[in-house]
Amino acid sequence: MAVDLLLGLQWGDEGKGKIVDALTKNYDIIARFQGGPNAGHTLEFDGIKHVLHTIPSGIFHKKAINVVGNGVVIDPVIFRKELDALKKFDLDIKSILLISRKAHLILPTHRLLDAASEASKGKAKIGSTLKGIGPTYMDKTGRNGMRVGDLELDDWKEKYRNLANKHEAMISFYDVDIQYDLAELEADFFEAIEELKKLTFIDSEEYLYQAQKSGKKILAEGAQGSLLDIDFGTYPFVTSSNTTAAGACTGLGVAPNQIGEVKGIFKAYTTRVGSGPFPTELFDEDGATMGRVGNEFGATTGRPRRCGWLDLVALKYAVRVNGVTELMMMKGDVLSGFKKLKVCTAYNYKGEKIEHLPFNIEADNVTPIFTEMDGWEEDLTKMDKFDQLPTGMVKYIEFIEKELEVPIKIVSVGPDRTQTIYR
Image: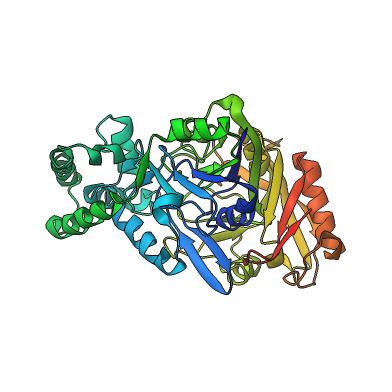
């Protein structure tokens, strides 16, 4: 049984949490394969809004098993808060939430390192969420990290202390004013570790192999977005893991030939949180309207998202890198009321017209070339069938499909799980 993937195709915040929640009824297992609590997957149903950071977005479906894969980094303190928020839903967490022993742990000193590193950059800050993600992945690749499986060993506290001491020496190297009380942070951390140890730890690659073998349907859930991939994103303004389809193989131990459908999610426009190039960014009333109507604030950080027109050059790049087989368009309802819409279909790159994503898309090198289309006035939020959509939106969807050569199978017309049109 193949493993299907669900990925964000822009700079994150595309609405992956909602779609995973909507699709979970079709799957036995939801497996998160990368990222950490820098993710903010928002789900809305029954009039309640939920934000998940590390726990997979299928957790509210009691029949689905949710796996936190080896490619994920876990902050026990944040994880415990997520678990506390789930208590009122009467979920059998020990049975439906499984943690890979190979997943790495975010220590308190990782977060302090993150803050020190970002502070030292001054105006060159990369826009870190300051959750300790980057330093944790650095320890992983540097072969120094602590993993969930280490908590089952007698000497895990000794390993922790050695690593924390190393981090404190590194913090002093940055020579910035970072005020902290490590003893207080550690008390919270150790308490959270004890809660984490009550959960079910697994050898996730073996678990998923056996699940596939027995015919279980698996959906791999990514975090962030393809344009934040450590290799293929807008480096250095990226995250520290592989957010693209290849990351599902390394983040879960799934073989490449076992990947089935690759479901790509994108917004009907483009947003970005934090620093980094953004060719189609708007600084006018249109951008302000997108932000206001779309409630564009980071689910994890609360930071306002930068807004702009849909960038098909970047989106086409993400579709190709991931091998996307079907698309899901989010927040089409936010564009209702715009008389004219613009879509970037090419770049002017150093005086030359190009239709691919170049090495550097900073404003000095790239100017977007737009195609203009008619908008629509209708409110989409009560619509539940594709043939109810206004002509302007249907033409917008068909134009995108023609450019990307991939069908759009789902159109989201609101934040609630019921506001989803299947095509």
